[in-house]
Amino acid sequence: MTLLDVRGVDKVFGGLHALRAVSFRVEPGAIFGLIGPNGAGKTTLFNVITGVYRPDAGALAFDGDDLTGLGPARIAARGIARTFQNIRLFRSMTVEDNVMVAGHHLHRASLLDQIFRTKQYVEDERALCERANDLLGLMGLSALSGHVAGSLPYGSQRRLEIARALMLSPKLLLLDEPAAGMNSSEARDLERQIKKLRDELGVTVVLVEHNMAVVMSVCERIHVLDHGETIAEGSPAEIKEHPHVLAAYLGEEVAPSGAEAS
Image (cartoon, rainbow, N blue to C red; front, side, top):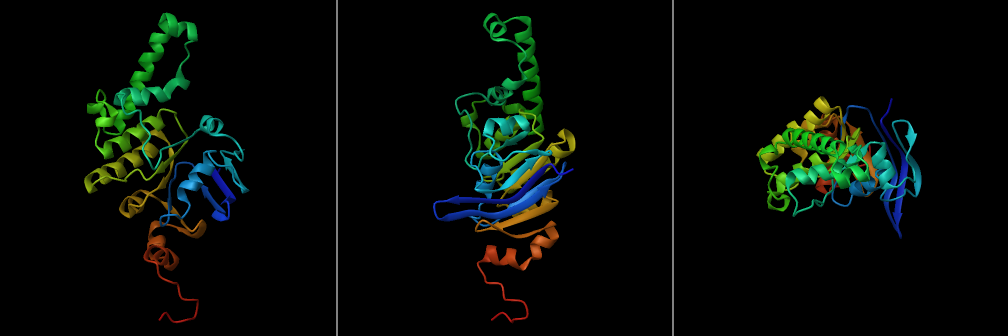
């Protein structure tokens, strides 16, 4: 069964058609790439999927349920988490606390339990701490758990945001440019970590990324947008050679079928 089904989605801002009839499917357990030049509509599509924007046309389904028109909180509760192009951390809090704060939904303790710090509250906090540290370990951040988040290098902040999103126990994780600001060594580590999310946690991943080495290494299928429209979809090998993709990235025109390029 398809996990995420995007069907004919449009989004218009004033006179600008940011998305036009975008359709694709993501299967459970996939690592799916969503790429395109700057301004192609990738982050706008993430915002539509997560309920930040309501689509002007089309429909969205997740795990067989209609998502169209639902707000961000209800969509997150269904099992979709995301990171952001611009990092959103609690910069003055520790690394561990940044992850734990996303686990409030796991608490079984009542308000009174929290006020009086009962056994249930203590058990909840211990479980949250253990899960947070497991996720920090997965993302290679265990040694930094007590550090202030704002003091971390940019690449580590990116990985911390992923760990925090995983605290929501998502079925689907949307990663918006996770390799931005990383050097080549950090990007290779990220590739391994993304594969672990799928292989060890069973999380399906949709990846928006400009680092093509990362995209081609981890994604099994890639969907390409340009000016809000789909121009290609296929395997990494197919996308690397697709004339419309090359034209979009290199700014060249594609010759019509049967015509010679000048």
